[in-house]
Image (tube, rainbow, N blue to C red):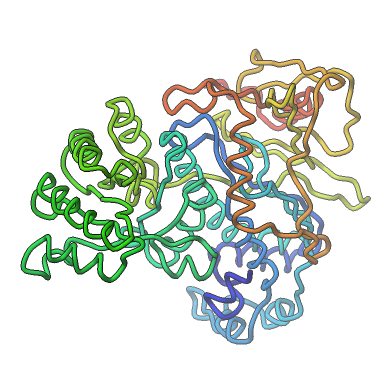
Length: 493
């Protein structure tokens, strides 16, 4: 599935911040362009005050990297750039260097639909410094947004407690790119279909939808509109009942249901898009059941999210299917994930990896140094803890993981009694794709399966229990020593 090429007809290498090119030029000028380096992409806090996050966007990353090259029109643009003094920004020899550049990085990543946590790498990039740097902005743009939306969708699906959730957000999404990526990520997060027809075509997502209030308003009366729609779609009729008066709309829907049954078909559902959804869904259920149509589904929409759905469930609303739009595709209550991309190791002149650390007055912004990976441990099929560790570390019979922000939060794991899974999997080796991409349905199923591995306390929508994720003991010591080595001792204020 070549998403970027299908949508944009070529390379997107200029989709980056200008300072990536100024750094790239500086690396080239100083002879560091080909120095081997490792970057890690990770986030620091769960979105939506959630207890988990769902990774998404890797397929876009794969397409971006496979098309990572500079077309002549890209190079012409860069070559003509002027600095503030009116001279050329970049040396023509640098433009020639970019022309010859071929993507050669190793990339490892967690798979889409995987449940992930703060500080662990979602993507690890190893390769020439200049290439790793130029990848930063695009990878963050892709992973940040799709992971955010997949997580929101997963929370909504959990709130729905097994009821289907339809994604209806196209008209409120943040532009064409945002709409398509949101539809895709929503499906990975567990939604069952989308209203976005282009997303259906590009990604193979089931599409769904019926009619709007304008359909009703185009006829002389509601019953006539219902009958006309049923005549057009006799096998799949779903009627929007709240254009004028919801109770009257349900009565008219029942009249049409009787005519459909007489012709050998059944009304599939009604949709309520306004008003007191708990009250009207219960009244509609009562009316439909009394009329002999207990199988007719009730679909609810109208600015739903996980919190409103939870409230309606507690009110015992008679809603079978949830249509969620604006608050899903715009991540209404948190507009950004905040993932970052930080250098974690640099190979020295002798071929040794030198761990790198970025310090801050805020401890949450101190990164994890080194060439690291993540292992997840299971006991009787349930996830019990994730360990961020240095590649090549000998694993002991017992390991201790330490919270990077609170060293008093520790967990000891018996590795002989538990099962384990390495979360980063190879995606590219020396610029060549080595990963067999699963279907979008496979990604969606991974989300559903992975969430079952976690205790329900970690999946609470409000005040979730914190799942244990920490640094392996020797990595924690390395990080602490690097902080002490690089932080001035006299700055205590």
